Image 1 (cartoon, rainbow, N blue to C red):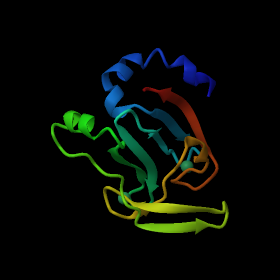
Image 2: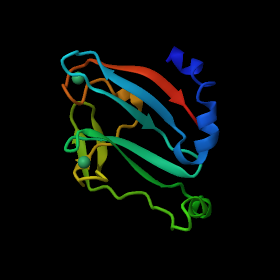
Image 3: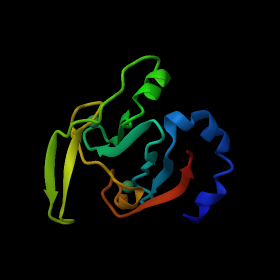
Image 4: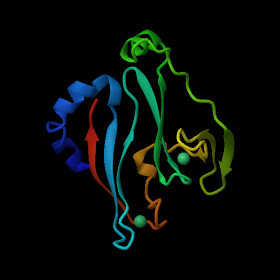
Length: 146
Ligand SMILES: [Zn+2]
Ligand SMILES: [Zn+2]
């Protein structure tokens, strides 16, 4: 987390250019298991106009995102999206109770394959590598860009 502040200046330009579209926090995930080699960038959080949900689709084998218009920002969203009407918050496709955490969670459909995925609420939940299943995931850089 310390390194996070160091990169803020570096990405300032990106922040200005994409502030309304892609603001959030990006993390570089790398698996320490050398036989695995999993390494991706994942981002969390929405911004001024849109809200975003992050999840991992087990069927696609990749991180997936759902994006919708923040309440009260429909007009701004329409301008940014070239007149297209605002996207509503996606409807859950199911609901599960996880005995290991005691948490009840909504499941959403993957935008690519429609397989159900469980939203990841924060990068802090990412401990296990989605590819090899071991607790070998490291988070290299957190880039805050809103
Ligand atoms: Zn999928
Ligand atoms: Zn791995």
